Amino acid sequence: METTVQHAAPSAGLSKAFLRNKIFSLLGIFPLGIYAIVHLYGNLTSLEGAEAFNRHLESSRSGPFLGILAILFIWAPILYHGVLGMIKLKQAKPNYGTFRHWENLKYLTQRLSGIGIFLFLPAHIFKSKILPTYINGQPADFAHMVEAFSEPVTLTVYLLGTLGVAYHLANGVWQFCIGWGITTTQKGMNRVQAFAIVLFFVVLAMAWGSIWGFLR
Ligand code: HEM
Image 1 (tube, rainbow, N blue to C red):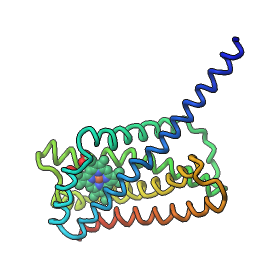
Image 2: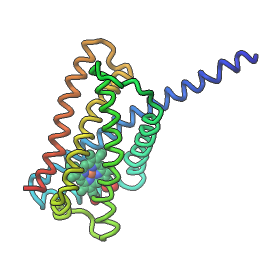
Image 3: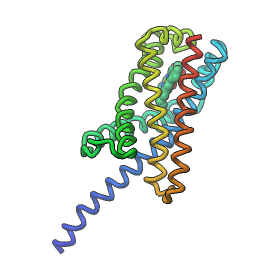
Image 4: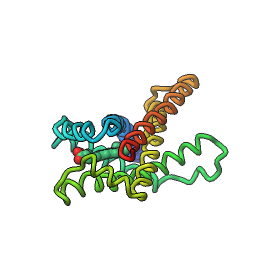
């Protein structure tokens, strides 16, 4: 009887950690990755000028991601993925001391970009949402973004922050496919790797393209 209890405890703990990791990885893609892509694609309207960007913002403010849906599909996943990511980082064993393996370098870069996003996202939400909407009483518009990007520090933070987002998301897709058993063969892994590289450049082009729209 006692033996059974002793064996049951660690396995229950293990399956909890397993489930937590699966949810963590799933939320990184659905909805967070999808949200980032949709958000960055929408921001590309900056390339069409002030009127198009402001129209885009107005329509997104009356879109589906409001109220309870925003909490469920944006804020709760950001909090869960961000906080658990930081906890995982703290618990990680330093097994990447030498960069002999490409995988180790990717693993380290995934974690470094995670830290970058953990710092970038609150700064971005403060600068583009809280400051204009709740402190200045005038929600962000094209002119607000032009002014923001005229500050070298802000511009640098956005360029680096979105570089981190592009890497973290692209490599995250690769990790997700392996972690969820979607890719099991070497050939499959190579295909996902190629897809991840394309995704990295697409996300980066959308982010830097929309920033360029405010700088021209
Ligand atoms: C080129 C880079 C980016 C630009 C120009 C940009 C622009 C904006 C703007 C203007 C807002 C305010 C929207 C409003 O007031 O309705 C906003 C909000 C937000 N952005 Fe970004 N963004 C960028 C990158 C990102 C990235 C990479 C993420 C990560 C997923 C992100 C996540 C968010 C979130 C969560 C909000 C708050 C949503 C809300 O409550 O309306 N942004 N962004």
